[in-house]
Each structure stands twice: as C-alpha cells, then as structure tokens.
Length: 159
Image (cartoon, rainbow, N blue to C red; front, side, top):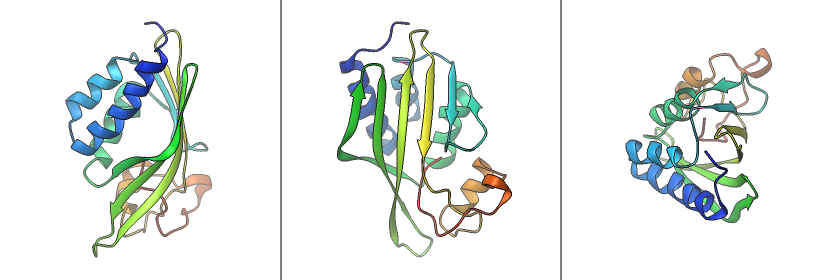
C-alpha cells in the first residue's frame, strides 16, 4: 500500500469525524481501510501500554466510546505534513445530569510506506471514579497510569 496523498489524508480526517459522529461503524472502518492495513501501533495516551492491531486500536475504541462521545476537529487545528496527520480534537460528552462537557486531545497519526499506522494521543485521563467517563476508562485503561488513580473530573472524552 503506497503512502496516502495529502488529498487522501485530508479526506480520511474529515470522514473520521463525520462517520464517527454518525455512528456509521462500517463506513468508519472502510474509511480507515482506504489508507491503512491491519498493522497499527498506538499509545493512547502516551505513557500507557502500547496497543497493537486494527481491532484493538480502532474498532474496540469505536465500540466502547462512540455512543457517548462526539468529535470535532478544532477549526484551524488539522495539520497534514507529508505522511503524518495531527489535530486538536474536541471530545464532546454529557455528564449523567445532562451537563455538556468538552475535553481536548492532541492526536498524531503516521502513515508508513508499508501501510502501517503509528498513533500517539495526549489527554488527561479521567479518574475511574469520574461519573461521566470513569466506567469506560475502567474498561479501556484498567490500570491507572503510574499505579495511581488518575485525577478527576474528566478532561477528555476519548480513548
């Protein structure tokens, strides 16, 4: 698989958000398949154990988070440089009492010549006790970073 072009990466990024927000899992997966193989490596967030493979890095995250979190790339914060994409992502979610919140994540994606993808994300991990996203993060990151309970309240709605 050749390295995706600028236009292909821009389309992938736009569709990543649109298809996630629409809940269209099959189309979201197909969007990934146009630019990458099954070879994925992900630090989500950096400082946690590496995840490997398309299923674990992408599909499992969709299954766990998509129903509660909506994305928006902050205007002016999508960067495509060569074979890499970076963005500042707004993660929109609601607390159990209906309060709307936004957490931010910085995310980078390197699309390699062999079709593999390296993903690195940066965000504040919600505490497992957090009322909004704590249950999801107990599943996603069962062991708190550095052996301690992450600080709350939630500052991110993602992975």
